[in-house]
Image 1 (spheres, rainbow, N blue to C red):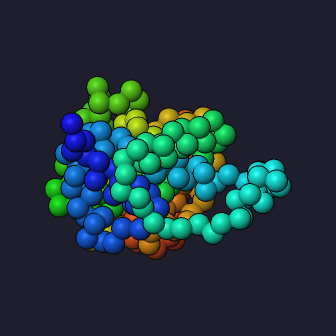
Image 2 (cartoon, rainbow, N blue to C red; image 1 turned 90 degrees about the vertical axis):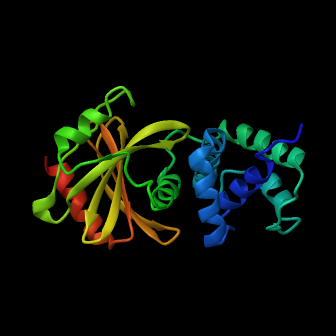
Amino acid sequence: MTDPCADWELLIQADCDGELDIVATARLARHVETCPACARLQSQLHGLSQRIRDLPRDAAPSRLAAGFRVAPPRRRFVPVFGSFAAGLALAASLMLMVTTGADPSAELVAGHIRALQPGHLTDVVSTDQHTVKPWFDGRIDYAPDVRDFASAGFPLVGGRLDYMNGRPVAALVYRRAQHPINLFVWPASGDASPIAGTTKGYNFVRWKSAGMEYVAVSDVEIAELQAMARLMIAK
């Protein structure tokens, strides 16, 4: 029987390599919203791609590294599902070599882009933190810290469930002027000062505070995301 998602799996692989144009990215975003299997695969592969990129450059033995330099890499896809499955097996083996502390920012930027599709930004729409926070009860196994910062120019507009490494996480939605900000939240130990970066044209700021890890993603300036991070940390 033909796998109905075989073509989508190739697109997901291309998306993880950053090879899709904006039209294909939008098509894929619409599909993963209605296909849990492809959504999980996309989440897992984005996570693996980021973790592999985070591996130390000098981690491979010199003999192995020399072998990899024999042939230049080719950015091309073979439309054979068996090859794709073999790639997944290789990716699974590489997971044994990566740490759980890899930066999830690339995967969450992809989640931010998906959320920008019409009708996907919020599952619960409210400016009231006492409405948004209880909405997550029973949907995730932790309680995110939900607050409204309208007086500082970051009004709360709602929330939704998103996914990271195949598990659901809370996504709190704020606005800065007309720009949406996705604030992803999940449990984590320790504290960490905010760090900033840019992926696929979107800015992010990541930090840990009070038993939670946060990643704020938007197209606003990094300085504005850092200001929002300070508000969250200040309690």
